[in-house]
Length: 413
Image 1 (cartoon, rainbow, N blue to C red):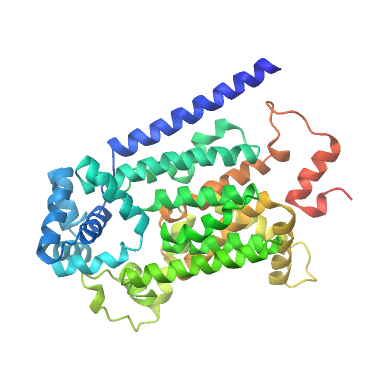
Image 2: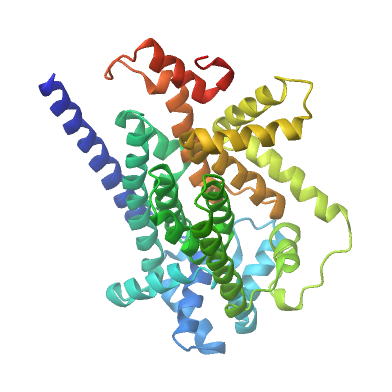
């Protein structure tokens, strides 16, 4: 038995190290180098004190030195010749320093990521390279934290690479964005929630500095802690998180929700500071329909389908109670009694719903954290507490309690 345990531990370490190494190397050697690389490099140079034409020249010179000629042409002229909106947008931002400067407030709000790429950029002598080096490193670190979540959820380590690929963590390593840093910090926050660690309050407070939309994760996690009787710390942490969110947006010169909505999901403009919001109500309805379609057709859809099935099963159980009241009551019960389902299912799914409600643009990279956690939950509930041949059998009482965690009506009397 001891030999089997040692072998299992060795295999787990091998799986972890190989997965981390592959993601790290692929991210650094095969970066996607999408358009965001320009905006983040410009944000870094702006913090260095550059403005106007000098800012534009240094930004594009940095990017040109790191990408191929074909890629640079794509970044400055567009991916599809027939897409005149995208082509005009990229050409204008390339040729007009004012247009480039007006894109920066959308990106400078990721203050921790930009400071990290400036730090790494001074070491490798390229802000462009540092954008995906930082992403690769934090994707790898996120996998390490995810492995710990797997352990707590009683899911075997052999599932790790499949969750990494299925949720999109591996793809984040190749991007020039703050998403991998945010996933790493969010995963740490969820891990602290699972372990009932006081670090959850610190992590929840600083999440908005990684990505401002992660204020939703902060509020959801702290709401869970509030329900679980750690109220004073939850209120203080929530206040700090909100203060950070407001301060970051104000410091970065954020244009506000209406401009962000119109620029991102209605029509991108090279001059968002001068944008006039659309008065056509269909422009505000159509993005929600497109977001739902994109979510259903995405590679992460299996996690959401299972979650929606679970919610529908709850709503159909007792017709005497209104569906919303029934769901709210059940969520409160789960938060109090089943921290694993709360952290791995309730928080991630509510984050997806809240994010899409406020910003109806389904880009899979926004929801990698939710997809990864939901997949862990699915695997942990696929059998009784993740029961598998390599794990010991539970007693009938333990098995009944495990099923009861998924559905209290089936638990021990």
